Length: 158
Image (tube, rainbow, N blue to C red):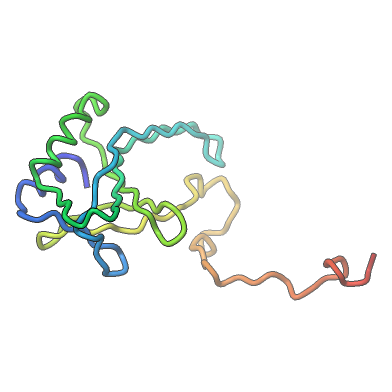
């Protein structure tokens, strides 16, 4: 979702609700603790220099159960941040405290609810990295280390 779509969506709601990918909701007393422009300059594994820019905002909640963000408050946060964006209509990325670390999510708007969407890593230079196309899809958690080898720790070989 781009910033302009986010602003349009905020204008259409009475209550700012965010749903996580697992179907649960961010507690309604959340804060938007920061909003900014994230610029990433890097070289991929194919030796191509790349530049990415996204608008990021961080969602956080504490024990102040009465806190509620209104569309007007969100507009004030966006307006205060506009000098960073320089009128760029970039994609939004949401940071939210996952189970053990900060999660980065995309965001969509459906049926009056903002939904955080999972983000995935990928190889950006698939034609250079030497992995066959049929093996590019990661099998997260589907691999196992070899049972043992002669040089495994405590194997008795050394």
